[in-house]
Length: 105
Image (cartoon, rainbow, N blue to C red; front, side, top):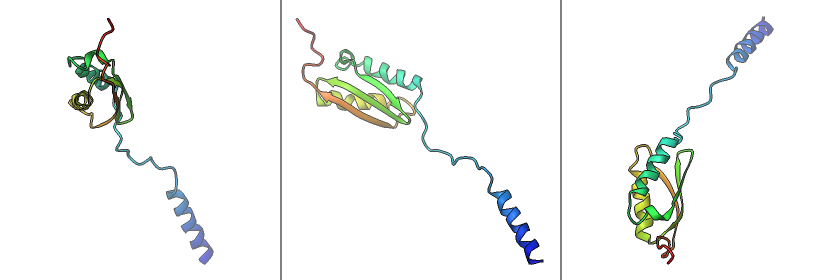
């Protein structure tokens, strides 16, 4: 009788240990429309438009790369892209390069 009970318990446990769904993730990837909206926000700023800032998305993180003419421009770039709905995290890898926006003579 004890063996029968053990076999029944083993069958029940094995039946419950099948594949389960992966846990839900809190990462909401940034889609291309949001990346384009962030680029548009940067292109409307007089100081930042000529800087050719590279904008990309890595999961839920928006990444900024390139050069800007001032620290204020670097800070403003981050503020402008955060105005896009759904963008909360920004990796601001912009480098302050004072001659970035100047055009050669």
